[in-house]
Each structure stands twice: as structure tokens, then as C-alpha cells.
Amino acid sequence: MSVYLHLRNLSLVMVVLCAVAVPRLSAQKVSLDRSGLVYVLGRIEIVARNSAVIDLGDVHTLHVGNDVAVIRPTDNYYVPVGVLRIQETGATSSHAAGNSKVQPQAGDVVMFVREFSELKTPELHRNSFFREQLVKDSGANGYSTVRRSQISVAMQEYQSRYPKWRRSDKHVVGFLTGNSFSDGREQLIQPLLNQIDLFRDSRREGSNSLAAAGPGWEAVMNVLFGPTVAERHAAAQKVISDENVVEDKAALPVTSIQRLVRDELFERLEEEQNLISYLVARAIEDPPRGLDFWLPLRLSQSQFPQLADDSALIDQIRNVIQKLQDSR
Image (cartoon, rainbow, N blue to C red; front, side, top):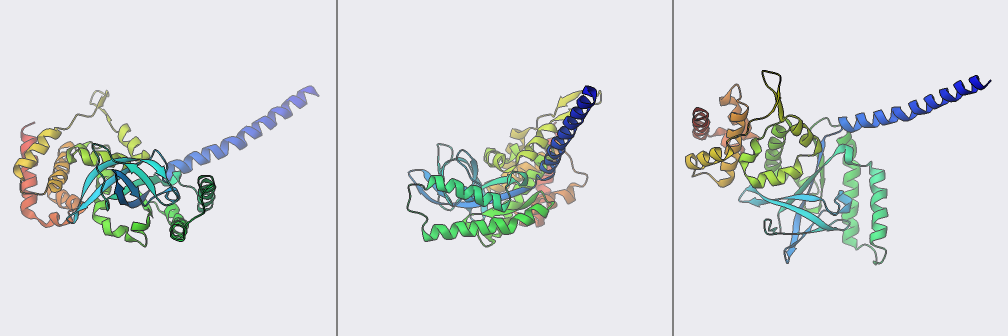
């Protein structure tokens, strides 16, 4: 009898362990499969005493201690300003202080990303948000009419877009926006988004060429890569030699690339030079099979797509690449 009871208890334990193990494995698989990014976009509304007020807050999944990328629209192109750390959040706005390296201005674009696996369902997101606001607003007089409207718009946007994010198999599945980019106005900065996607795609493949674009782009892209891209890049830094020995990838001659691009293309905008330095670095790090096709394609995917039709520029870039390869 005791043997029977022992076996029965052992069977029950095995059933319980299996029941617990299956959901854990399933949850892990979902997390790994749902690494598509959601862009969260806003703008700096006010800067007072070097403290920036941003139109993104708790309802947009922004939290105290998060870093956000700051990028400045300038004469129809974009310049990376740097990274700010959030010091205080409200329902639809937040505060971040500038520093000696980053001087924010009203109108600057503010961005960060969330992987889909990090996002809650609309119902859980709504419940979590309102619980947090009850604590924060316990001594306040309630929401203003404007604030209620902004919260409502953000909640509706989250709820309506979430199913599309879930179904998408793209690397970037969608957008969550502050008031400055509501109603699909993220299309206004599509050239900027194209260039960010260009940088991220090469990073995912293990490329180290972003350093050639300058420290500004390196800083903001560290906020905009997303954790899965960062992990894949780190894993790709080890290469197998002919002797099956794992080695670190060789460093790119970034300083030489930047110097030669400045010398050869001094008449170009600084941001154009940064982009060209990046493309030259990529071509040296992982030479494309058809450079004449590859260069216009990559230029068309940047914030300066018109450069793809500039045959004289493409000849100059090809010559820069050739000079650097000959000098190695």
C-alpha cells in the first residue's frame, strides 16, 4: 500500500512539474519571437533653466530613469543632439535636465523604443496606468480638460495599434506618439526614421561602422537599437578564423575614414559627410559584391535620399573607398 501511495504521489509531482514547465517554455518562445520595435515619438515643448518638458509620459510607457534620444531638425535634415535621462514623469509629459554635452531646445524630436515583448496588452496597460496615476494624483484636484483629452487620445492610439503591432513580422512594428506626432504625423520625419533603420539593420548584422558616423549618432542609436539588436551585435563580434579559433573582429580605421571624407568632400554638409563616412566604413568592413548598385541603394535609405541620383558624388565615394583599401 505504501509503495502504491509513493508511486501515486510521485506521479502527481511529475504532472505538476510538467504543468508548470510548459507555460514557462511557451512564454520564453513568445518573448524571443516578438522582438519587433515600437517607436515612441514626441518633442520638447519648453526649455526653462536647461530643464526640458517633453510631451511623452506614463501613458506612453516612459518612466523615471529612462534614457531618450534627442535629435534636432535643421534645414530639412536632422542632427543628433544626444541623450537625456528622465527625472520626472506625469501622465502625458516628463522632465529631463540638459547637461554640458546635451543642450536641448524646444522643437527637438525625442525618441525611444520598446520591443513588443515589453509591452502590456491594452487592458493591462490601462489598468496599470490608472493605478499609478491614483498614487501620483492623490493630493491633486484631478485632470484638466486638456490633460484628459491627451490621455484619451494616447489610450485610444495604444488600443487601436496594439493588434497591428502583434500581427506584424517587421523589425519596426509601429509607433506610439505624443501630442506633437498624433494623427499619423510621424510621417513628417520619415527620412530620419529611414536613416535610423539603416543604422540599426547593419548593427543587427554585427557591423561596427556606426562609429564612423560620429559620436552623436553613436550616442542616440544606443537608445534606439533595442535589446535584441544589441545582443545580436555583441554575439557577432566573435569570428571564426581559418584555424577555428574565436577572435574579435578587426577594428575599423574610423579616424582615417573621417579625415579622408572631410578632405575629399569638404563642400558637403557635415551630416552628409557623417553619412558618407559611415557608408565608406561599411563598404570596407564588409565589401559589397556590387558597389555601383549598393551605394545608391544605401543613400536612398538615408535621410538624404536625393544623393542616390548624384553620380558625381558616387564616383567620389568610390574613389575614397579605393584609396583607403589601397592604403591598408
